[in-house]
Image 1 (cartoon, rainbow, N blue to C red):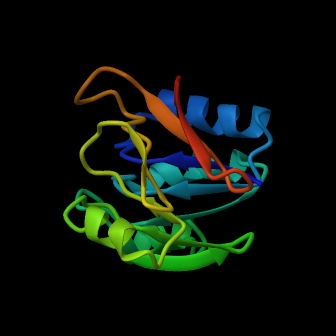
Image 2 (image 1 turned 135 degrees about the vertical axis):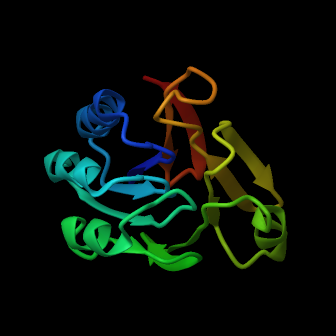
Image 3 (image 1 turned 90 degrees about the horizontal axis):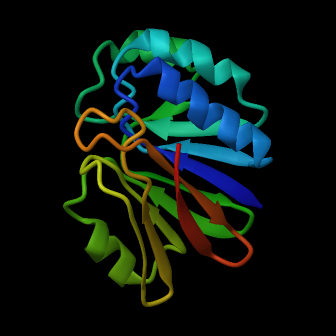
Length: 159
């Protein structure tokens, strides 16, 4: 299964729309958001996804109750641990314990955001992915990641 990974959308609706369109065009079977949607109105665009999605709250997410309502329960507190296609995944926003989680060997995939910098690397047998920022607010580049859960390979895509 191919999954889409995004983070740090920070209400930049044109780029959120581009990310969702890319995931739909690439037939992503699932999308994971690593936090910092920012405002509840951003969630309207997620209705256009042609697959299920899940996300976590980031440090800049405002009205968490309304975000959760608009996301129809698809936003969780971090860390969020779940299994998808037999792969154990943990999703964090901040980067502080990413290396320890990857080094632990308990997860196949560690996803994080917050730094706005893309990162795809292996730590032992764990794939670590930060899709960078959708928003462009920090570095001027809108990026997402695609991860193939069969091969456990990830790639960064510039929008």
